[in-house]
Length: 193
Length: 174
Image (cartoon, rainbow over all chains, first blue to last red):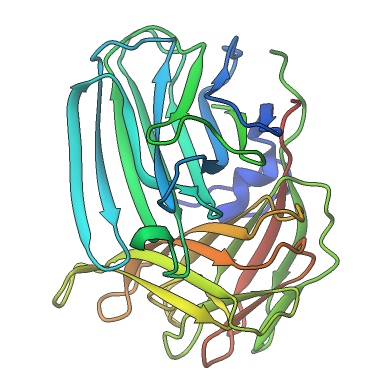
């Protein structure tokens, strides 16, 4: 089956992109002094999915990489789980956590001068009939010159929040460092159904 | 939190009609937050798709990748490259018989404070050997704003029918 663009008549991969399927909602560019966490509140309930695009660096000392944690609607209960495929730059592994208070982005945040990336999709976030699911691709590269031998890594992660509430708030915090550094940027988008 | 009207904006699109060694996007506007480059490459020899920014051929690029191909041993791997003269956009290069895709996100490309980073997904539907799926974290150790992207193959030319599309992604209001 091929899908044609109703806007341009084009056929192919770029169908969705050419049809204004994604709209920017809000962005945070961290200023001087950093911030402890990023929170998007009052998220419009008018989209099908959400996407967060982020460039990340924490103030973790000594090491070149950190982790991030995602939570929804200020829920700190043990209502989350996640699985990942993890590439260390030399080997592949898989990890998970169940019944924890976080969805973890492992080793994909930069620190000590290095920067990480993350593209996080939050699916069917307004649906009140099912648990909420997340997937993301995130990573960083350090040219194999990271502090304390901690170098680049890349993760492909799925996460679950066992709650049927509509998501109206997303928080993202570093786990080892205490703050996001200046120039970290988190942009929230809505994706139309 | 009102939504801001906007979307991906197509900056430039090229479909090759002849064999071409390098496709270059130049004079890229600095008005977006991220860039999204979609490449549907065709090549004869399964060579890798590579990127250079601002005509920099110095050894300022590196990647960390994870890759799976399902055949052979091992069926998956993770590795890195360092101090290279280009950024790999795949681990398994394209063929001339199967359309494959590279989705290349270049983050904060116009800032002049940080090194430039990319996150890339790549897949080839070609049967092993040659087929596979990759994810890449890329680094260009330069604080320059990216105004030019050159897309090439590591030792080959793109065939007619290869498609290249560059989008700008706008961020929402602070």
